[in-house]
Length: 375
Figure 1: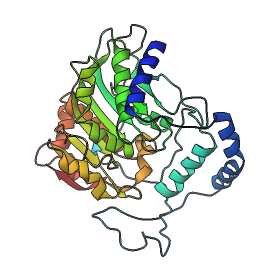
Figure 2 (figure 1 turned 180 degrees about the vertical axis):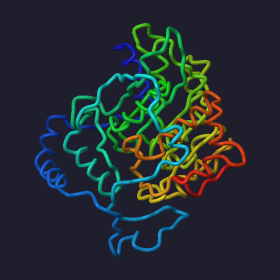
Figure 3 (figure 1 turned 30 degrees about the horizontal axis):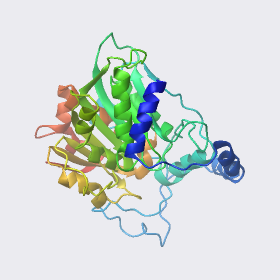
Figure 4 (figure 1 turned 120 degrees about the horizontal axis):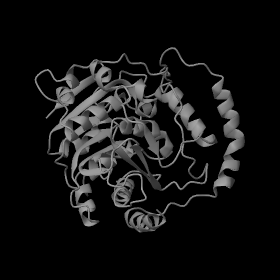
């Protein structure tokens, strides 16, 4: 694996700028006092019973359904009664899973970050962390694999290349990666701190290619790159939409001749390069904005969506805030949609097809979704 790390170091250098980070121990000491005190204070505040929109804030006027912009809100825990999509695809799959890096409790900064998610995005359960700099010893630039552990010799399964958003501690994506892996996908989670333009997704995809050819790797001969789906949240969602037209060529260049992106999912996707420096994607595309958006107005999420030339679906998650995706998998419809879309594209699953095809397709008839469009 050391040899692969060296190779990927060269790839990372070519794809993204070097991040300057402080000494981990120093940064942790610097943050610990006041932030821990604030965290302790926040921990004593009960959950709100309903969302509060302060008077005079940008969100105190009527919500714009066209832009999704809500403004400042103090949020109650997000609750959504499961619709037919979550009822069918919302349970963990049958596969036991493992990860190349275990999660840990978050340090002071990301503990505070979880409190922001709690009180301004409606999240119910704090997300875990990987212990990356500045709160731990692990690099903030890298990749991890989350995978089923019960695959037979040379049994190949589809690949999901996954990305967090700007500044998100990558361990916060672990619960979602485990959910996808439990449904029989190998997840290559890439991260770079910025996570905006796709370098982190290229890094993890190339790493997965190398691991698939490494007899000492748990992924050895288990990846079917001809069934690859790109998934990301926020800036990572913008990266997924951008890389949908680029990833095949990148993997072909490193010797993965069978590589083929068959679909992409952008969750509250940021605009990335505004589609000015990347080709429009022709692969099936699913974009999932939040109804109560605080960071990425819907018109920005639509830039890459509108340029995409393949089949595409737009579905707004009712009542959701930007960060609800980072909540546990069973709290919203997001992960059910990722799995159903992936099963539809990589396995031809007939139940999943009913979500996206036909006159009465479930995507347009699920009470957890609004403003659904299909092209």
